[in-house]
Image (tube, rainbow, N blue to C red):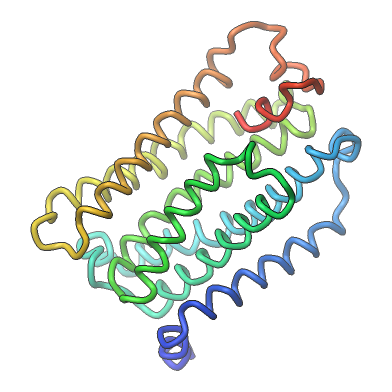
Length: 259
């Protein structure tokens, strides 16, 4: 079945991404029917953030598991990120591209672009790289390896959802912050640095190597900054009365919920 579907996707990568984007929008609508914590219901920004993170969590659970499975079944992907791919890996990149288009649209259309410009910058780079791979059928394996970061995104999204619910002192939050640290190092940092190393090692013959190396360096700087923020917020809080400990709402709540 996938062998029959692949030519259709390859002939129409742009429309295929838009279809996947619409499917994630349907997921967004369906998730709105689920109950949410009372603290979330009482605040407009928290309500939007909860809905946004719920869709992101679905994407991360799906694509993170899918990416790791692809590499486990076809380890050639680690050794040839330039040319090797399978129908399932191509479909994975197509689906993930659709999510990032949907999420960027959700951020912009709901009026949160200014406060989420870092996410939009990240999404723009990912969408551009993923569309390049879909149209050229190059670096598909590299995109799959890059999606290893979604394993960490599961714990990152859970972390923020627990903060939205105001349960930062709960055992669930303490367990998740340790899992988040582990997955950040072994899935996000490791995947990013492996791809950077691969591009540097094979730079002389890779197609558009300069662009991808530049993109990876920017992404690496971003994830190291996020890692510092994560360590500061969860393991080295600045003071006990900080907002992160009580979950109260004030003028800095949006920054607090994005840390």
